[in-house]
Length: 137
Image (cartoon, rainbow, N blue to C red; front, top):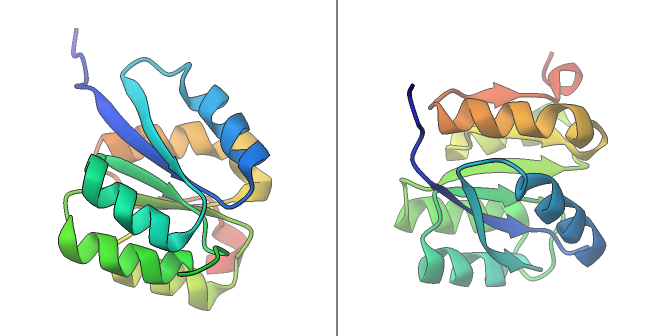
């Protein structure tokens, strides 16, 4: 049996009730450990430096630094952290920019219930996955 190693996760969203729902959803997955939460882009950069998580679930519409800016800072300093955007933003330009920065996944919040767990598992296996397909093409 192939057992995946522990995957540490940082949740970044400015809406605290959504972070709680995400936390509840993800804590049920064996091998995932939620190590922190952040409410804005600047805090995301700071927590990423402090916690050095394997996976960062990152919203784009954040105060202080938006998610794209925060991901740029994080991936420059910690290129081994895998960023998955979880956002309401589905424009093709933003999705393209996210992957150009080095994102491993992109999930529209409207599809989080059905796609997020699949995307997280794919990213843990080193695959890129986009659930905002309509926005992309």
